[in-house]
Image 1 (tube, rainbow, N blue to C red):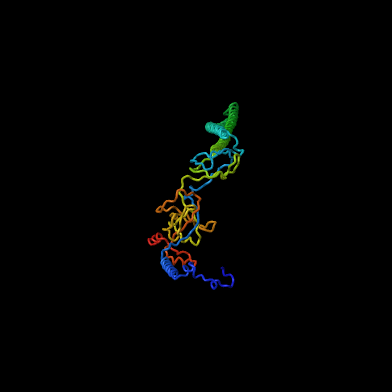
Image 2 (spheres, helix red, strand yellow):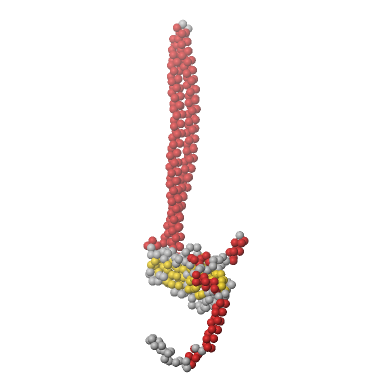
Length: 450
């Protein structure tokens, strides 16, 4: 039966009288088959001239239109240890709701009264600042008093100097008068001595004149001595003025030095107060960080750190959250060779995984279960998978996307390009040519306007 041997079966068995032979090899069958071939050839030829939309395909996933609407994780800005969970996975939370409570792990913050003790330190330092301020005020008063006293002392010394100068002047006059008296006494003595030799004056008169001369000489010496003493008093008065100035300069300088030291201590205390206030604010803010709260309305996805008593570092992820309100979008990746074919505002057709669809990539109007999308962003740098990422948003002029679609679902994107005949598309495919490079009409209109 299988004609495996060299013996031919049709020469030994006559099958012409069977009905199947008559139906299979009858003349009517040949005629119908030829008609079918002719009709198929005509239809195929006509189909070759049907329009076909060139397209590029890419796989991607459902995401959100803006980064703040995408799934995110909640971190703790401080290290700690998990003490209590207030939510379960899948729970809906509002912004500000407490998710979990943590405790401190650093020994610098173990004191439960740390904020109050820091406040007490601030009060003590403020009192120290006030004390230094009072000391500065007292030293200012002391400096003012010393300055006034110096003025009075200098005025007193200057008056004494003036008195000494006047006494020098008076003694100098007396000294000159004594000189004049001495000259007169000498002349009288000489005259009396001559008259005595001539016999006109007695010896007693001469002796009186000699005695008066000696008294005048003694008085001259006394007046000269007074004059020199007065000069010394002037010098002493000048020295006293210098001494007073030096003495009060030393006192005032010491008071000013104490004042500057007090001011320095006051500024240092104020700096310590500022530092303590900063620490107190940090402690107060740190106390509020023990309650990890929801940053937005959303659903708790997964607890990354789970165990009670489990410790973690600052910035470490604790729990994942999915925002409740978001604008859905699609991210997909295209080959670098197709990048020049994609522009902002380009139309794509989207097929969602798990959603029933009948897709004719070249005839988008005939496809069923696909949804329109527009290109809103094109990545400028290639991704790690060797392709360029593009972001697609729902086309407002097309059907709304299904509300049951969730972020992370897989999609298949079909980018619609230029319309060409089917025969041209077949020829392009057979030759391995890329789709026709073109610019969208919008960009052409803009270029003409430019």
